[in-house]
Image 1: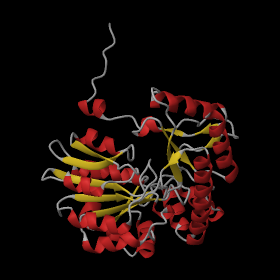
Image 2: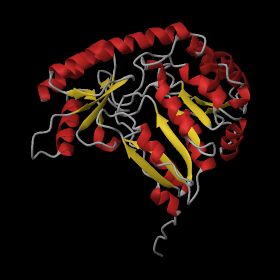
Image 3: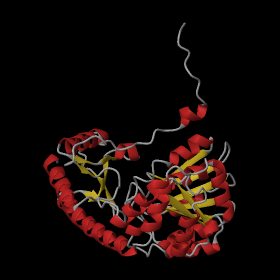
Image 4: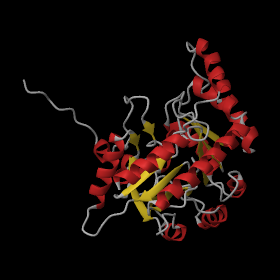
Length: 368
């Protein structure tokens, strides 16, 4: 008998594959600058907090993440009933797509932006309206506001933006949110907000008091260095959003080790500040190194940079990018190719340790 092929839903054919970075089986001396991870390991106190819960893994985690939400409420001044916790901030984001979108609905976001956003429209059958970033690789908020219609259910602003590293000022975000109709959910994806020097990361919290349709999405993966545990959260303008995203997800969406690690990580704001300072030093050093090579680099407000490779007339940007990315990999430096992120001929490079950053600039210079 011939093998019958399984029949999968139309939705599976629509959903793009997330462009994950490689290198999980590489030797130790490779500079891993492709995934926007922190080069700093978790704090010893965080490791201790995780170790303390391991003996109880025969029990399910707290399905409401009550202690973590209380700790987040104390830190951010948002009632715990308006905090959605997730298996990484992506979990809250994908659940928002499930809860808000359906065929006939529209979703608006900038492009290039975070690679998970296209998944939301594809999975739900909604229509994605993508608005190109401006010539400085920043969100064009006026152009985005102009795309909002009666069919729009969700607008996403990634600030600072991944992969372009740029940020728009908090007052521009405030003016934009004020323009969006109340029935449209606005998610401001602030995964990298701690690294943003344009404004204090807490500035946008005030907007939650005025806008019930607003969600600020944040994560422990970046500055806290916990991406291996997957824990993120949404600070929400309404309890209804929290109820809806919880309704469409499996129960126990945040594991016990992740909850313990995040609660402990919140106690170490001084370490967050130290990491941010080191990142800003790295940012300046890498930008100076790239500009010395004659490379155009976006104005980064994140823990990574976005650069456009020099492409001669008649050259294919994708070919140039491919050559540089594989050349860097051969030299033990892993970076992200811009083509997979929406702009061929570009690179996204996470800041690593000072020696890794110097090695990246030197090897790129040698390849160019």
